[in-house]
Length: 156
Image (cartoon, rainbow, N blue to C red; front, side):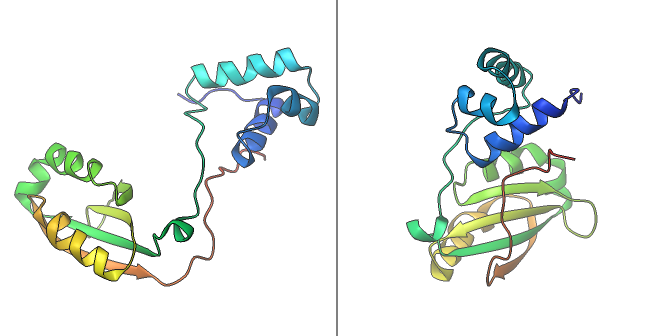
């Protein structure tokens, strides 16, 4: 269910998406509220699940994860009937950052990061290809990143 967000809520969310380390006093000052109402709004949005958590974003290349691969996965009929088994296996792979169920010619899209192509090859043969029910994997190597953001367009 979608929550009703007013302009203050949206401004608060936009600021938190850019810098989650801001204090409620700093946010309140920037959105034009006093600290207590601002803090209450943030708490409400946490309780409602609008704010799911606060994390530190890392530069993957600066920690040696230089290769990003998008893998299109097609399951066989047996694999589709064991959807839960497949999803649990994928959730257990730290190399897989995102996994989406798709409509169309493939069943899933994975975003995978590894140190290099050789590390992806090991991941592919030792982990991914061992997941029961996979019929086909089409791996697409990203050459460069044009845009990457975690910020949702909350301001209209």
